[in-house]
Amino acid sequence: MYKTLDIYIYSDLSTYHMAINLPNAPDTIYAGARRDANIIGMVNPLNLKIAGYSYSDYMKSIVHELVHVVEHNINPNIPLSLDEGVAAYESGLDNGVDGVMARAKSDNKFPSLNDLQTDPVTFGKIGGYEFSYSLVEYTIKTYGYDKLLAFMKKPSEFEKVFGKSREDFEKD
Ligand SMILES: [Zn+2]
Image 1 (cartoon, helix red, strand yellow):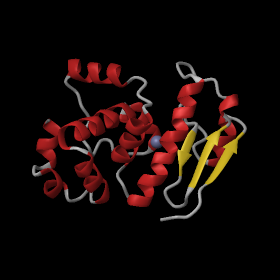
Image 2 (cartoon, rainbow, N blue to C red):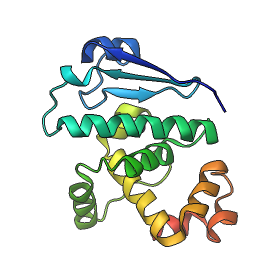
Image 3 (cartoon, helix red, strand yellow):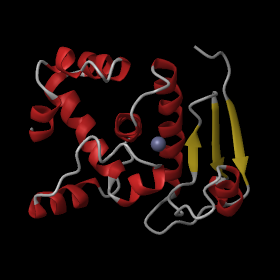
Image 4 (tube, rainbow, N blue to C red):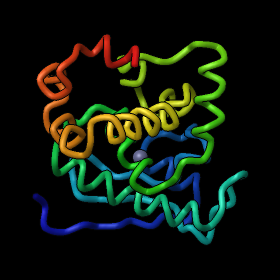
């Protein structure tokens, strides 16, 4: 476990996007926790104006990034969907989850866990945050926190944790 946490505040979105090497990132990427160090970077919330987001959403994002720090200390190689799903669920930042899930249900089109293992920009575009939120909510409600934690620690031991194959889990 790391002992300290550094928080870097960036003056505006473009400065932050340059710093994380994603100059074309969408506005919704305005904060992040590094996996290789206990460092959170984020844009000054007083300098953020993103359509559909409120100041309280920015505050929830800080909780979201703090959850990432805990997750990365549990498992630095945690898969992106689990990493983002737990952070989204625990911070209560659930903008758009219902809409994305309703659309996926009516189209009967859900990404697989593999589809969600991608880069952060693509992840956001395919509804990764919303699907991951829903996945974690389902896991907690169906299996409980202990199983979720076991899954976070050893994502490869899928059958041992859930007593079913990854394919059957995805169908559920
Ligand atoms: Zn995140």
